[in-house]
Image 1 (tube, helix red, strand yellow):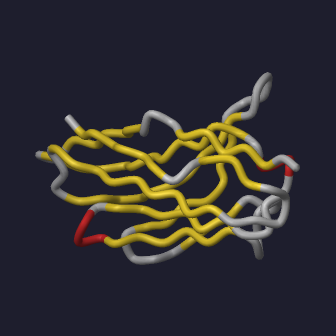
Image 2 (cartoon, one colour):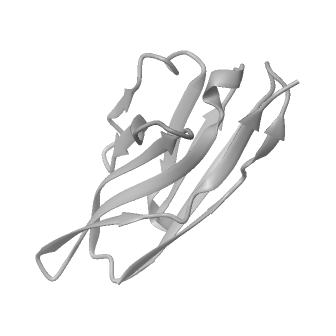
Length: 119
């Protein structure tokens, strides 16, 4: 019912920057929360950052001060600005939306975008 399309991943050198975008469409009445998760090979998917529709944010300790999550609520789009990237940031990044439609909550995921930080 909700489709998320991600973009912005790629290969960057340590210290570089990337900006990820995720646009949601479909049956969305309201958005409760938007977030970014990542999963490296052999590891569990972990929360990177999340933001509520009201703009409250939370970050993983490992990315605080380097990553910034933001949203354009009118466009149902969430962004992740990643600065000072480190090799350990290498992972597939997934966006996530918690949305409501007809009183029903739905947790939706993007297709994932690869971020590789390497020299």
